[in-house]
Image 1 (cartoon, rainbow, N blue to C red):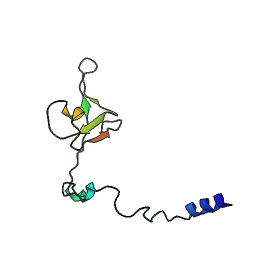
Image 2: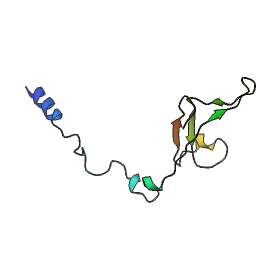
Image 3: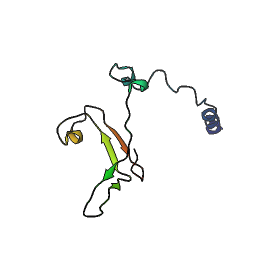
Image 4: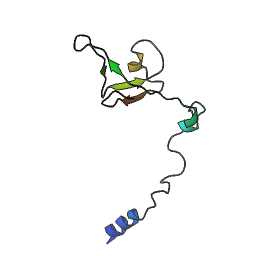
Length: 95
């Protein structure tokens, strides 16, 4: 009987009620964390040119695209102090 009482209590939890007090992370309160209206965006299409395969540019469908802080070539892979954003292009190369 106790098990069914526990299940009923879980089912009656209000999904909009916070499960804990306060924010789980402190970084959104940092002055370095830009609010949504202060952030930029990147859009466009990504193409690959392989003259040995085809004469026309090909859409880089499903390619992974990463944005990271400027630095030495390849430093994005070893330098993780700054924020990185990764996304994947659609099948037609759109970001």
